[in-house]
Amino acid sequence: MTGALGVLGWIPPVVGHPFMRNAFLAGTGIAACCGAVGYFVVLRSQVFTGDALSHVAFTGALAALAAGADLRLGLFGATIAVAVGMGLLGRSGRADDVVIGSVFAWMLGLGVLFLSIYTSNSSGANGTAGVSVLFGSILGLSAGAARVAALLGAMILGGALLIARPLLFASLDEAVAAARGVPVRALGIGFLALVGLAAAETTQAVGALLLLGLLAAPAAAAHHLTTRPFRGLALSTALAIGAVWVGLAASYAFPSVPPSFAIIATAVVTFAGASALHGLARRGLAVGRRKDRLPAGVSEEIHG
Amino acid sequence: MTLFDYPFMINALRAGTIVAVVSGAMGWFMVLRRQTFAGHTLSLVGFPGAAGAILLGLAPAFGYFGFCIAAGVIIAMASPPVGSALYSEESAVIGSVQAFSLACGFLFVNLYHGNLNGLTNLLFGSFLGITNGQVVSLLAVAVPALVALGLIVRPLLFASVDPEVAAAAGIPVRLLAVIFLLLLGAAAAEASQITGSLLVFALLVLPPATAHVITGRPLLGIALSVVLAVAVTWAGSVMAYYTPYPTGAFITTLSFAAYVAVRGIRVLNARARKGPVPMREALT
Image 1 (cartoon, rainbow over the protein chains, first blue to last red):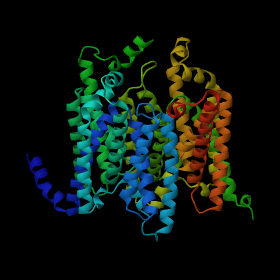
Image 2: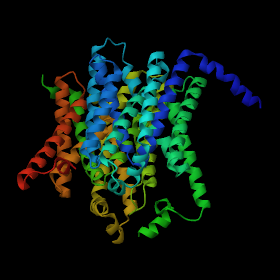
Image 3: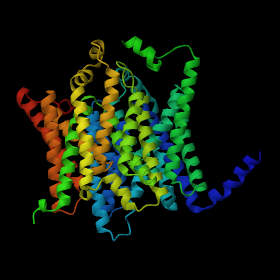
Image 4: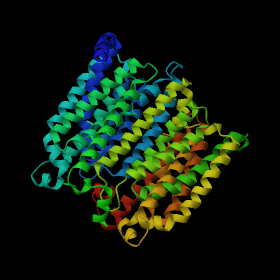
């Protein structure tokens, strides 16, 4: 009881600071779009693509900084261009693993180049820019930037919901969806563009290196907790928002813990918990509705 | 004074050569086995390992090897059994492990209150500050790793190309997968110390992918991949010596250029042989 009251009494100071309010506003929008897009990323097994786009985000942001432009210009431009490019090159809007790996290995090299150009051109004061692009700086957002981030997050979420039904169909059974006249390829490319947008958006909160955690972990947790698509989509979005809120509160309580670590740690712990719950539930149920959910030993027997 | 008169340049080239040989060989199998995502994650976990080791006051090398090898074991455990398709949850696990370990690395650096130069070095490497002792320790890991790869090369090849038939023929496919990920982890840890965690992956994926496009023959392919890796490392180091830009940028750009050139030549050849080929088919 006193514990609960203690927590309640603790809320006003957290949202009392303008930088915390900005962080919560931007973080909520960012998490919402990341959770929704991430649900489809995991469903379509495109986590590696998300990984690649996160590195592209790093390069794009530093290219913009090196050229003296607004960071967000490079961020969004690069991720969308590369996402659409990967969609166009791959079969039915999905790209090959080795191609993705090759492209983003090079992208990263370019990022290093831009980082060195930027840090040697700008007069020393901005040595931390590379670090904040890599690991995020959600507490450093201005009120205007936070509003823009929240608005963009809502728009990306809207876009994901708009194509949710046909995309679900195309992801689960591509051949049947194509036969029924669903534009599978266009959907795949459009979806990758959304992933690119979400990656650029999330870089502002947790950074290019850590956004994969926010994209994959809440979505994978949702996939464990329910097999019903729309419930899963909602759950994934809610878990992502929860992770950002808990993470922000935790980093407020423990100032030596950076917010991006707290956010990712919360998301990953949620995933681990959901995975354990799923494991327990599966042991309780009669063995397997889906053969790929069978325990490893049984599956091995079947597949020889 | 030429570039070979500077001891730091000699050490950079020595270390770069060792790293390139190991990553060229391991990377060839990584590309063959389509484990690029796992390889990328293995190469990134070196960062929290090194940051954690520095926080505890140990040498970064302990952290690199400890974390990379541990992550190799975890990924091997999480990978699906032979014959079943790779399903989405597994890649979600790899992705979450990766993001979490990077987040831990960032936390360690923050707790250490060290300077940010240290962070940049961990991520992007420091080619030019390599000591003689480091070269020796690189060699001490590289030689056993390559010998181990040489010992399992035949069964590993069989198990990678056709896991089901290999399993039926009595080859311990799962054990081989674990051993391979351990070796890959060791290679990644090794390369991380020179190129930094973010650029290891370039050496692991680009020269081998190029070799795979050029030839399907295993031994020739491995040799080619090693030669390419060494060549881009040397060329990159020399170019970085004469310009103010970082070595990593040159190495990745050169290897990517080689990859694109080889793919382009293959598309042109295919077109010359049997008339126009759809672009998409030739590229994938």
